[in-house]
Length: 536
Image (cartoon, rainbow, N blue to C red; front, side):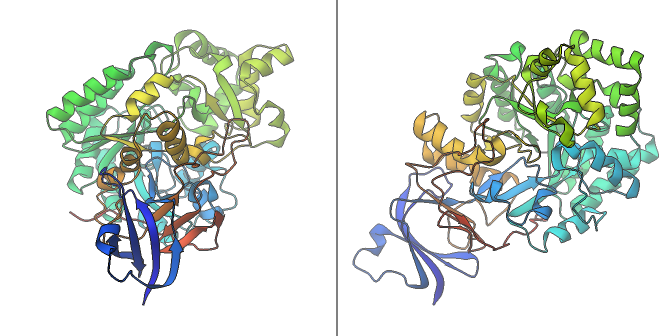
């Protein structure tokens, strides 16, 4: 007898087609039978060892978080309800060009310091890997949700070239090509880059094109955090489209937003650019989160020259008064490349997390508010945070536009990505709320997307980008990575004031046919594993 039958579910199968009522039978981690209501009339209904009454609930494929920063959280936190409770059954790690493989001892220490604001220091993690394959093997020991991995171009450049702003030599470029090829051969699904983060931002287009040619050979995709989301954003998008087309490489645009005052209402221009490329045969997808503020580290705002050489060099520059004044001028007057070419507005920079407990009073307040309370300039406050917290401070950046968010999420190549940073006392609520916020706010309350459209954006479409032949839809033979939610009540619990509250209206989540969320509570099941790139 089969393992489980889910009875009388309203199946939204991920295809975008209208929902239907059915009994869904699961065994051996896969969907073995779907008996639609019409077909079941007058015949014996399927039986199983366990039966779950899904009356009033929608059954959909598990949600795919196309832009996650859970690289260490999955290892340190077996519960990981931040994502499991949202119905996320697969996360894509290695984002924005910086992560923890491939590394040697030197670059591992540098990367841990550089992205402590994203993932924590890692002092509570046993870094018993160095290669991409070894990292994926580590995930295979058992994690809360499934995870795929992108080779991070900045980490690759740190390993082959260092943290200097210079062109790679021919030998160094060959080394980078080998590292990318090895990572893809070991199971990575593509290549990411962070072109406003050091050292990845020092790569010219010619270098990136060469690496993307390798990605294309292995059937992966390129996922850039491109060079600007502010001044010059459209030019930066066009640069990535042209680069990927020249390399013959599929392109997935990370957190594809149009932010800052210069881009208010300009989302249609971005979509026109993409539509023209798609009509010409380009292979392009994108992801967004359904919120207006962004989130990153305070150190990411600095001009690239201030970060050259790595974290230790950046701290040394911040300590020097004359260099610090030059940094302030670039931030406040020129428009730092780290701040997307826009002069920084300190009243939009809210501190969301610190690593030093002595700085907790800054959390939840903008830099401007803290500076005013102390009777000092905003740069004095920001500099204190950067030095005392050793670049580990995380921020929310309130620079988005609701009309852009809604316009982009309607596009047919759109997918969902939380960009969720789980560190800090008050992280962005997107880390805990992205997927139920789509379903509750943008589907039920606003009607921006139909339920069937939205589920397709969050399931089948990302599975297609990842080239996963048996995930992303409710179909016979597919893996039983599934979500049951109440379309009348599903909502993000997380808010900017209380960002770690779990969602409502998602009583059951299954991975590999096993309940990781049951009756709204996290089980002790660790059904997640590494999801490796399918061979061509």
